[in-house]
Picture 1 (cartoon, rainbow, N blue to C red):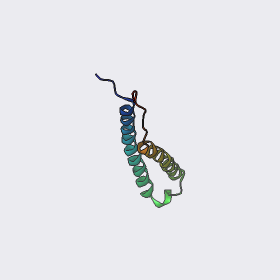
Picture 2: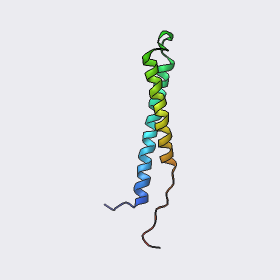
Picture 3: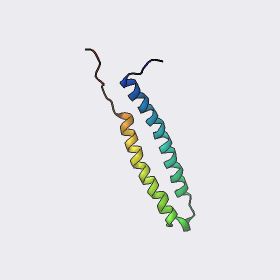
Picture 4: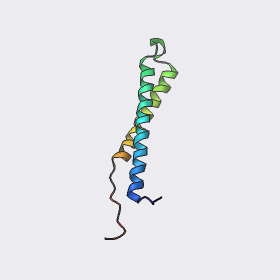
Length: 80
């Protein structure tokens, strides 16, 4: 088994974060659907507020993950 370079390991980690980003987005969409389809009498309930709060939290997580996936780092080479 060959040892991966730092750049390869970084790219692999980015790919893992990209997969997580997809999962975070799916979770957020599911929660938004749940909130949107709540009966009218529950739309102002504590449960609705809880769901809305998690949706907002996922916005931050998604933004952070997008930043990680989109960052480019030029690793120094061992020679030259």
